[in-house]
Amino acid sequence: CNGKRIEIQVAGRTDAGVSAISQVCRIRTWRTDFGHFIASDSGASTDDNGEFTDECVESFIKNLVNKEVGKFQLHGGGRRLRVRNVECMGDDFHPTFGATCRAYAYLIDLEDSDEGQPNYHAAAPSLTGLKISSHLVSKLDKLLRALEGRELDYIALSYGKIKTQTTLCTLFRARAGIVKWTKDEQTEAPSRQAVCIELVGDRFLRRMVRILVATALREATGFDAHGNYKSFDDGSDCQNGLLDILLTKDRQFRARA
Image (cartoon, rainbow, N blue to C red; front, top):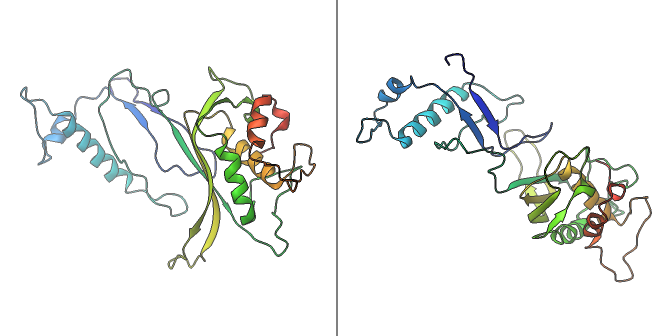
């Protein structure tokens, strides 16, 4: 493009094993030679000055990208990528700093054993291959809901050197519930249940989501940071476990993830 690179900036990134449902991407290009391509579109329209309207350019780019991307199959045979919407924005638009919220959904398989105990070890927690019992879901939900709508310092549930301007975050939605996959006739995969942990916030610190999930699971099972079991049979409620950890601003009380 006349010696200038096309600039691409996205709102966020995903780790290995994480699937993104949608992503906001800003693309800056200095190309102005695609007018004749748009003109070949029967639905192309111009304004009073004979210039193509923003709506026409947006529609053309969306259809062109989806046509080219549709030629490639994702690794593992997943659904192809596609552009859902295209808008012409001003130079001051930034997808990261302009985002008002980000949403995550964490899915963990449910496995109810005869003993009713979760497959979870507080001293060395691992979210890889983790399965939990359904009786923990209500406790998880209470722990997470206690964080909703509050601006809190999440440094205790973060990792590494802080590179953001602030460690204050607000979770607009923090819930846990049970979801079910129906049997897939094509792959013959059986139906199964999982706990879905929903997190929607204005920002997330480094590894905050996985550490928050691991710590919530540990608290729901009744263990503390030192592997000691905390009984709630005395009528006390565990719903403030995560909130209490955040208020300490101390990473030693979080779970490893």
